[in-house]
Image (cartoon, rainbow, N blue to C red; front, side):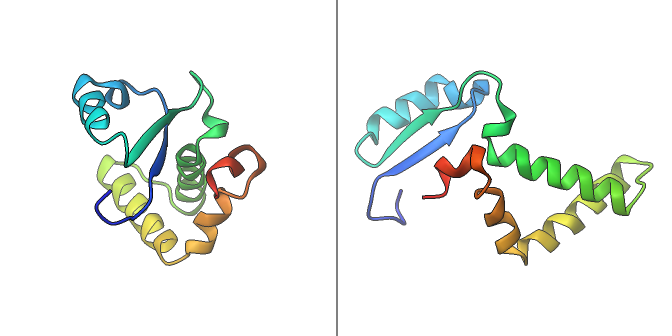
Length: 104
């Protein structure tokens, strides 16, 4: 909220951490700068983060065969670094019809 001069609308799933008392209190103190909107109960298709998770799962298992936690972590980091240099690919996840609400 310090970096923007307009109100932030944060879309979140209903994970318990997103509904914690500490967060609710902080949001109440900053209600003029940030507002939280919750997705329905279970709807991974509406959550761009879940689409990115699917992208990771698909590409990490398609390009590598990690056998240990450390191999899986390394392959995931490699894929995420690649995506970090491909912002258009990540932005395209927000272009899917189901999550287009988050693109504006």
